[in-house]
Length: 264
Image (tube, rainbow, N blue to C red):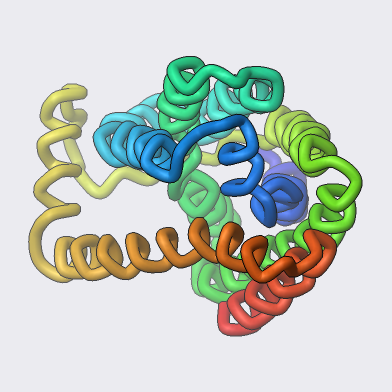
């Protein structure tokens, strides 16, 4: 494999993180769904379905990424996720939005960790795996900056019409998908010497993710992420109740992401 071509993956992954994290809609995500007439309970049922599907498929989709293709795992995630956006924008049906977000959980599982894996395999193939932490941190920084700027713009768009922020996210997602198609599949470096069946690989992945240090970090991160998510989703109606202009939401969100990106 041509190392020069493979080296292009790094800048392409930066672009994917920039456009993939341009989530203009997040600053009014809760408010937009509540504006459809959904109750807070229905909102959290929708979110629970999304995260539950994503959690249940985390390992099976990881096995697909490990054994079949990291690139196509990321592409399929976009193919699944992008059409869901206009469905959510136009539908006022709780059942339809619930189903759409459940399907979105499949896309989230497919992309979760895959960008990191393809980055590591790319660097390993180039003999530069020692640079992984540095490059991965830079990738996270670009993603956080993108979220910050998208948050500011999203708040301004939402002040005109909340759906505009969702349409901006829709466009950014399509750009990210186009870049994903240009990725070059690096060699997949397996940790086992012999070829495993799908079910053996699945069992091995489950054992790795639930035991030892990996299991500790998985179960440590879960409650942390739970409280973070609840705070994120409830903050929007709280700010709205204080009659904070929507345009300001994005600047608050931007500050949070700049801090997170700098830490990365």
